[in-house]
Image (cartoon, rainbow, N blue to C red; front, top):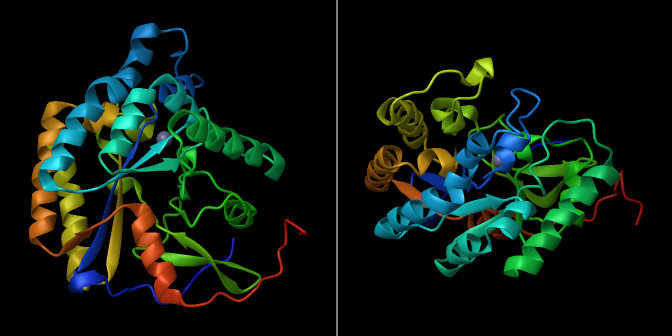
Length: 293
Ligand SMILES: [Zn+2]
């Protein structure tokens, strides 16, 4: 995948110092099914019910918390989760939040061909359309996995952004054969991912559980640094089954208040991507490598 627009610092609306995207991955039960190669969660009903906590208990608390700040967020929802928890997704939409694509059954891992990956993306999109009448504008790969062919595949799928890379503090435009294409990357990082602070997987990277304040403190340090530089962005990765617990949700609420008071522009991922596309101006036609028509 070619990147990137070298101009990494952007001027945000209202002279805000930094763009902040509150995004939540509603992996629900799939997070535990997909990790059955690490521990045998698949046949462990109560372990899998940790995932159910997200749509059933965490999301209502998070939605109320976001309302108190009048902030709209992005929820990445695997198609299967929309089928299992349609009322939860409908309530997100009713309150003005964005629904982004996140696979069908949260298919992690790698090594898939373009055709295999395309089938998963289409299946996820079809489920979102059928269950909640949403056509997603952006994609976050389960586990953040993308491929060399993904730029072209995302454009074909009608996405205007991807939120997968970890190599930049600012957004950038993906490129095909040396030319910018209207696909914005909104990078993320494990530093801004609650899964790395608050989960109990036996994966060695994730074996410790931090207090909400410890986790937020580390994210806050990053926020302070980036806000000081100016023109940067942060895309948070929260999971309602983790950050939907009361202590964590309260800490997150306080953190939002802090960022609001210190120059943050809060927006949904689709709004930030559209803002950047509007600023870019016309895109030249490109010669595709993986699709011939
Ligand atoms: Zn996920």
